[in-house]
Length: 179
Image (cartoon, rainbow, N blue to C red; front, side):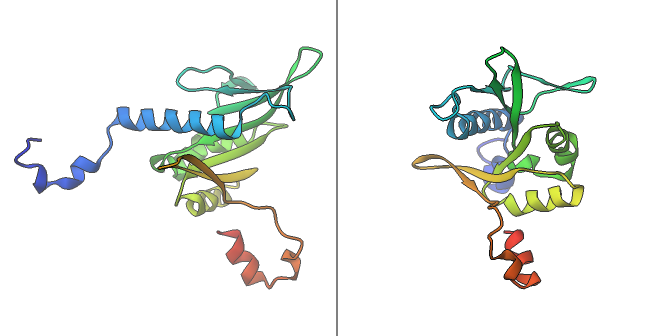
């Protein structure tokens, strides 16, 4: 596209290249890991975080298959063994769809004895919940992420049910569950 024709098709200028998309998801995964999974900590000295981008640092054996979730947290026991504790997937806006959910989220969520967390861009939390509910993917927590002028920000979009939830009318519970 030349400088003279740029104004004719502005939408093509807004499309991100594959390289930009890849760099964006790598940066987001690294930021989520640093923000939420900075193990070991004082409270959890035996936990270790592994980030599987741009290179796989820890794959998880599930049956005959090895899979590499974006973030893997293991607990290193005193016996020298490691125990998988949690996994996380970080999606960009292009990756919040049923195809990605079937291809990776469902596999990560099905790993036995671990909790799966899903991170999506701000504004995609409801869509991600809807997709996971439709496909019966068990997610331990939904989080949104974004870059702000103050830095990287992660917010929870799934809160545990309140003790007052059974007292609420069903329509109110349903409305609160989709937010």
